[in-house]
Length: 518
Figure 1 (tube, one colour):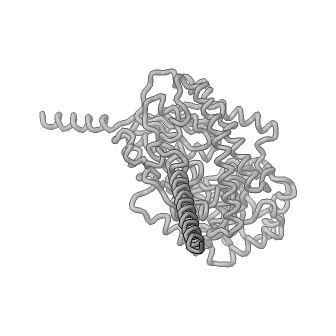
Figure 2 (cartoon, rainbow, N blue to C red):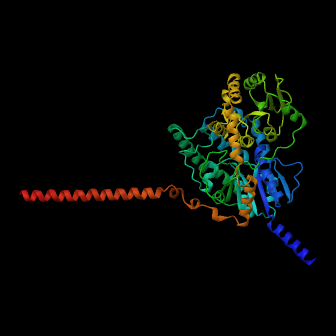
Figure 3 (cartoon, helix red, strand yellow):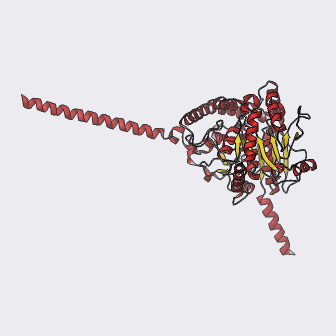
């Protein structure tokens, strides 16, 4: 009996000793961003950790888990977005024809403004002024660097989740090499390798981004820290403080690029096994003898907001197809709805893509949708509008499992041609299956990898040994400008010494000749 009690005490001690208090900060009002945060925090709670998730969405009923799961729902960011929408600042379809420079400036200007109210929300302020302690703070990277100061405030290691692959927002904060000679900036749609002119434009975009971040974004984030966090640290003590960056990417999805040790690929961690479909959807998919085309523009872009001419071109195309079409449409009625089109305001995308009758996914090219279609091996027709969508769409084209139709080029003719090309050429589905095989071929699941590294950081008190020395170097030392300057100076001095030495020798020779002649 005594042995049994001792064993139980050891088990209990082991369980509670490994249980950590983890704060997740995912304040973006976008449903896709919340999905990433909620999926990760729920998995940590199921592992036995006590988690708190700050978000703009929240759950009606928090999930039942082994550890505790607490929702803190803020409203300030969503309210700010509504005000911006009223002023006409958030209609993404209006920005589909932006050039890379304008699109880059738009994102850098709008995202910090959109996220500005988060720290002043009463719920976050209540938590800030509490006496709570956490073992780790996880913050999404979304132009919200001021929120990372919560890790400093709570005295916990900072873990950052990037909702996309390696990019400028991440590389500069971990000292990751990112040669602009072959890594396109996020707002472009360049193929690899880039042409000379594309490399010129990519270089100018990099310089523009550097200037805007250093002179606009970071000073603004620093002001937010000082305003909303008591004794808040300086932004420079926050930016380079992350123990690890969890990257929502993988070489099967994204371009292969260099990584420093504290950048961890977990792309696809949000993908769940297919769930049972509602009966009407199951019957619709099962009965489609010619297959199904699934059409969704994601959670941020709404199909119902498409301009009439674009909507009519899409309707005209769908009405001529023999395939059934499942369309995520956010209103009750679609004028001119063809008989082969089924509408729904919300659709279980992952379970739909898993159905064998789905032949094509027409998408905006968001990274989560791209990841899910690769997971299930379904070819895509991407209609990118903003952000990284063009880059993702171009990658699908380069990898042979999709085509890209620019939003401004949508006509009934162009849309029909692209759909028929994908449906009639088996290479697209074959390439999608190959990408899916590469995606699944891993030593551990993406979620297992994510949880391991989060617990690793907690065990090793921030794991400072993963940090590269580049973060401690001034920019001129990192780029070896001081070394180049020194070498140039030595070359000039040596050249001058050589010049004047030769000159002196020649003068002496000339003088000697003159003396002999006299």
